[in-house]
Image (tube, helix red, strand yellow):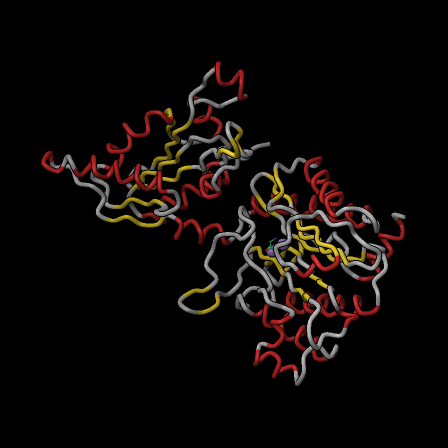
Length: 435
Ligand code: GLY
Ligand code: MN
Ligand code: MN
């Protein structure tokens, strides 16, 4: 069932925060893939956050002030186009179904906007997001300015609407958390399926197909990003995406895959042995990353600074690298010099939501921002050991990342993707049972 109340509430919050003026939030354009074939359509995250409206060629306009109004511009009904391309709400049905105050045909936008902008103090917009929209909006402003001698005043202040929306999107409401839980559950199931399916001799893309199958059969519209199915040496390539290697006995398989459901992303990584049994060195590295993840997750709580989980993960990984003989010196010296970055070169997480790397600042007034209930983030330490000088051969090509999606709760955190096993014994038992 589609919910319109959360979107209505978000529009009301944005209107209140604007404190006067007009906001213009267009959705994403359809994009050509090749010749006359489009990419599958995906709405703009900001627009969808405020409307829930899934069609292209749509703009939300909010006018603040004494009588705030939500105005949707969208495609009209068109029996001919609908015969070829499918259902469109049309203006009247969209107004009703999405709970806006007014709706107009998208084709009327250029005619109506100068009037809506006239005598308004501020325009809220996302400058620089799309050059075509930048030019269109400037054209409307120029039309308003051209009426100066008739006493019409154009907005003198242009503000980035994203600075308000990013803050709002950072703390998820109940509806968003519920949707993210669905994406998390389907994603966890897909990782289980991948563990059950993997065998030496299979191609990486066969596992990719298992993931995509599991996502789609549970109603996911898209993968949230293209799955990384990286075996053996590929596990040490952070953004590997070919997924076309034949997996070998003795390989680790790193899978970073998450689905998108109704706009919201999951982002999960699991690493496991293709054969179903970790070797000694694989297990040693794996246990360090798992402990780093637990240490990082323990720092996810209200009031903790954004960097606290990363610092906790780095401390565990640095100690682990010293213990394995991969870094020389003390843990603190390895952290201080950054020597651990040869093996752990990314951060421990990012905001998660409508976008996989979601909106929201990481610093506030120059300081890492404190976490608060309702924020969602990934916790994803890793360790990637490429063949190289001074690296014992038994560790070569061991690449491990363990990534879960965390919700900050009133007292700490919940890993909403925890249903995908990650303890060594649990993974080995699951894989044994599947054989
Ligand atoms: N899958 C993208 C990331 O982990 O950030
Ligand atoms: Mn991630
Ligand atoms: Mn990921």
